[in-house]
Image (tube, rainbow, N blue to C red; front, side):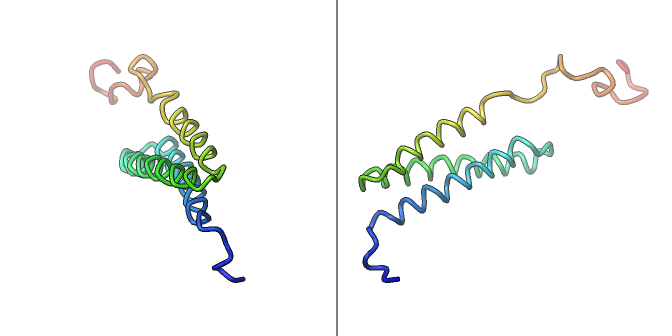
Length: 106
């Protein structure tokens, strides 16, 4: 395949796809892992993915590609997925988990 015959905006389209996959993986990493170390790494990766998705979507849309619309839809979905359903509240925590055995409140 001759790479000179492809349209110039294909790189931006591929970046949109890459950041979409990266954003979903970062969302899963930050929401499903309970340890703070992996959750924080997922949040940092999520921020990188959303910013990268915005830039790649803008550059792709500048080349009259429809991937800019897909990038905007993915950003919206990822942001909703990150903000909906926060962590546990104190009211949701059972008394067994609230204090160790032998401590007041157990």
